Length: 461
Image 1 (cartoon, rainbow, N blue to C red):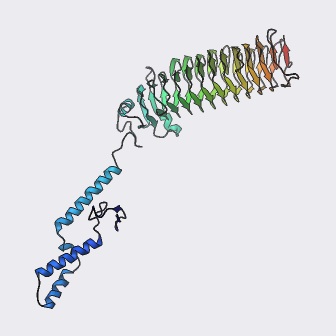
Image 2: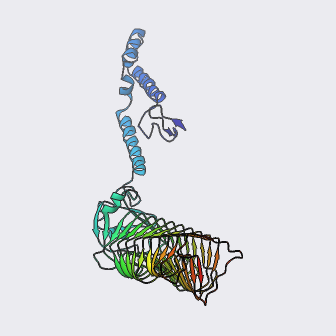
Image 3: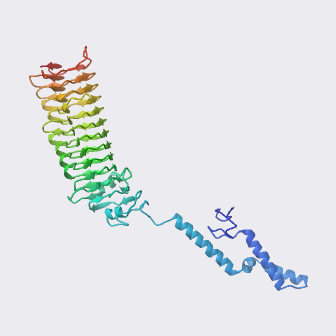
């Protein structure tokens, strides 16, 4: 192999008499061609007169003579061959844009998103330009990425819209797509949101899911699947169960989302139901309104989610469970903030028919929640949770149990702080009110901390 003295590229001189990258002819070959031409001229003009011979040679070695002596056809052949080689290399390096390229795919190459999906293969990336695309799309089992031109730019996401025209799911994953199927940085609106079913596990990230309507999961509905729902804004959706999210027999990972201002009959922010075990981590669940139960979250029917590090703030339930309602389930509720939620009973948390002690409520901040009947911070009935190391602060009940109201239950309270909670009814129980058919499991001495609760700390009927 040798390096071209013109362009520096490496090539095999046994295969090429010239550089196949730039067409350069090496100096030694040029000189050899000149000498050969010189000899041929000498033979053609050979003379016994030394002076004539020298004159002939001098004439032959004038500038450019060596190149002129080289057969013209050979030089043209070298140049044409070199150009052909360069063209082959260029074609290999600069292929026409594909679905894997960074250029805009829709609408530059395809008029609709679904056309681009239909043409794609696993591993492809489809890039959507700013605009409104009035269609309902289905990934059809393809593990591809569908994204806006800049998923990290909120203005771009807000202006790159898939509009479902109020005619069903706007985006569907229902054919077993795996984590290679990605929806990123798009606005999904005016349909029944995003449907994930059939054992699918796509990634939904950095999207805005807004103004959708559906009976179950108006924003995102998840059935028998395990998707990743990451850093989305799910806002202003409305349904019967699960205004923002509906999770049934599924184990999704839901992290870093804002789930706000959704409405539903039950579980306006989120419903987790039927043997589901999702991880709900670091989300902001705020200002959702339930006409009956579970303003922020409903957990029901043998479900066991891990709910950790979330902010559940300013949600409203007309009846029970302003922040979260738990029924017949064993979640782990850890290190969350439940604040400024409202309900008739259990403004912060409402727990019913959950006797398994694997239901653990640990390290939460439960503050400034308001119940119009009982349990400003916490209400429970027919349950046996572990309540440990939580802060119940500034909660209000207009009747009883400012911090907590306990009916027909046997909870364990340990290492909690009850501070400045207020039960405004004559029944009292500023910190905790418990019915006569309840058993409070308290350490002896009681290791909970009680500060300035009104009108009292503990009332045991």
